[in-house]
Image (cartoon, rainbow, N blue to C red; front, top):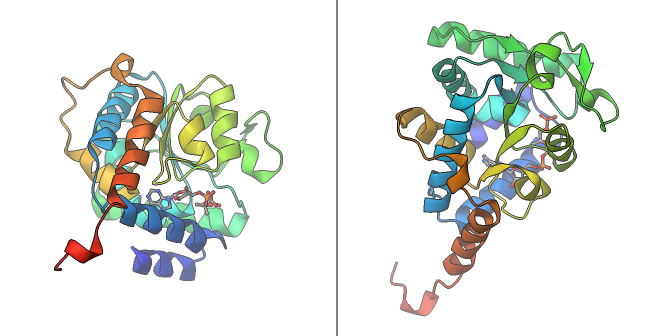
Length: 236
Ligand code: PTJ
């Protein structure tokens, strides 16, 4: 994963703070045992069901997401028959170009038919200032259900305030995005997307069986339990 970020950084795809965000994620993943915990698996099923039932589902991607799991995002978009929108917090024309080119190369290599939005923003997310508010009216603006992995807290709140169902993937159960999102999957991005790709689309649980605060509490409890490891008893 680090190597993927190094390659992406050289191509100009990443924000300056991308490595900081990744390091924070790695630390939480370590505490979670680098595995998908049961509450995250359940939240992924709920998320997949919500995306499947949506009228206008959109997968929103930033620099880290394209670098770490660009292939999986495109495959999931094909499975759901929905667009992917490049929507970055630290927006520059150079980064947008690098990210759109990378996704288009992946699309060709994978042979998937997915619409990629973000190049021609013609709308703004209300309540956000500056370039980070830019989005496409056919994409994020009209979306009813949005997948936003590794999202910034401000933008997550702004999207929720627009009345959208916002699905967050974030290893930190305490982050503002995790808490403010409608459905939060506390799992590593690529692991989570691989799980969602392998899930059958039938017989998924519906959102009325999802308890947001309980799901976050379960993730926090897993971290706390993981910390009860006893070195004196461990032989390995
Ligand atoms: O490409 P841009 O300009 O949109 O910027 C992207 C980053 C990620 C740099 C930007 O959104 C940012 O600064 O994010 P934050 O506020 O650092 O939040 C990132 C969150 O993602 C943190 O809570 C991390 O714990 C979490 N995280 C990092 N890597 C992973 C992760 N969660 C799941 N899987 C990961 N691989």
